[in-house]
Length: 274
Image (cartoon, rainbow, N blue to C red; front, side, top):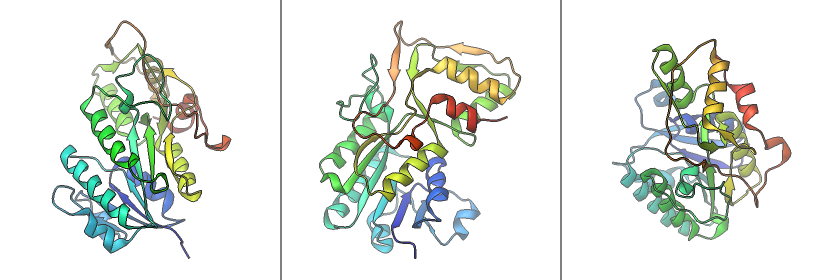
């Protein structure tokens, strides 16, 4: 019998769907979709959910999950309202917790060094501020009720970033690179394995889920391009500052087992092909 019951909000998106594929053989896993793809409509484990029209609480009461994974994207105001409702639901449910997929962008105002789990968040971007607002809601809950999973740039074969790179190469359009940006990275395979481990071990708190090393954006992208094929793309170098700027989330307090740690080179070596 599949023990834990999981609901993935945003199960038709890139990360949400990767999570569903990783978890459904091990747990009683459900997901939401908000796209017109037939595959989701015919899957009994997928529920249509429109953040701007539907009340998430009705869905939660219907499924009664022990774990809610929020991988939802879309209208910012609707995201905030949905998470407010989830938080209220969590307060009433003893055996339910939320795993929220956040972003390195919660630190994008701190550009002089990498960020660790207990560092104060501050963002200059609208996206980063959205993630902070939701994180702050969760941080008011008891720690056992939530996990905040901060994620750096996500690559991987089916990822939107790799698709954009390939489209630009094939259309002979310039590829934007940021020579001064120092980052860490992940992909869908590594990230879903890490989240699977956290659920399996019932872990809560704040986790930084990315490569354990740092890499310059331009170097990483040019190596990705080399893996895709023999191309000579036009690089458009964008300098937002004269100094090195960090957008990296590294673990210090919540370190995962060795077999779940990886380098930026691993992301290039194993998961990017033409």
